[in-house]
Length: 341
Image (cartoon, rainbow, N blue to C red):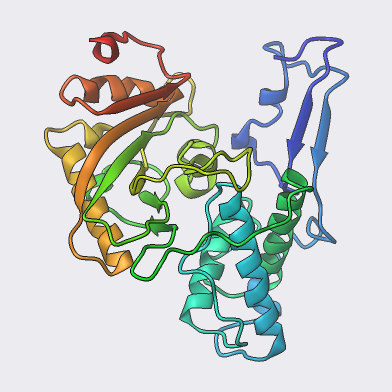
């Protein structure tokens, strides 16, 4: 917590309007509710994004059926954004790159829908794949934020797999029956995989259990948890570095919001039932195979990871499972006996 005379530097890349439930000022203040006088808050703004916050997407912009140079330029920008993000170990856009042919088809709409999910809360009202004013503002903000993260590293396109290989990708699954009883805000599941030189018969599985969230029941795993989950296949601080080469599928399931004393608690009751973790892995493998047009893929090594409050359900899973690797970050608030046995 900040103290009087201390310097607190907070950087945000979005012009975001804060709701009361975000408890933003609480996170910048002491237990007595006092904010240090030297606190500095920096936010990146692009054009009049803050003034047009929440602007109706249908007022202008590009929509399915459009064509011409404006659509070709939009495709080019999305290709470049995808290349920059994946080079830095961040989530890319699905089914990329796009042909820069000036047509507004289903693949462009899917890429825009993924972009809209990356936008700050409230900026884009609907995930509809339409390039309206707010969506174009979100694209400009993402472009500018990447320029700040790595200003000296020129963007390079990701390495494309050889013929028959699988490109790195990501899948957001809105509903997963296994997690239907988890309280909170969808999507239920995010999958991410690295580039594979050939169609795999077996892939390593990484299951991440996320922690608490100040957004409470409004938390979205694709927006609020994926960027800080550690589910990266290369070092995010070393763009272009060689990362994990073993075929790997990362799984980020949505937890159950229960609130608790902090008001922000999440747990994973649906995954603690007998056979539930194995069911999650099987369903994730099936979704991955379908997305890549692959034959059924088997599970290889199992890696379990957890952050913060995700440590408690991890310990319960370890009582009945013996993964090949376990990674914890700030997650050992309870008895770690299951981890060290």
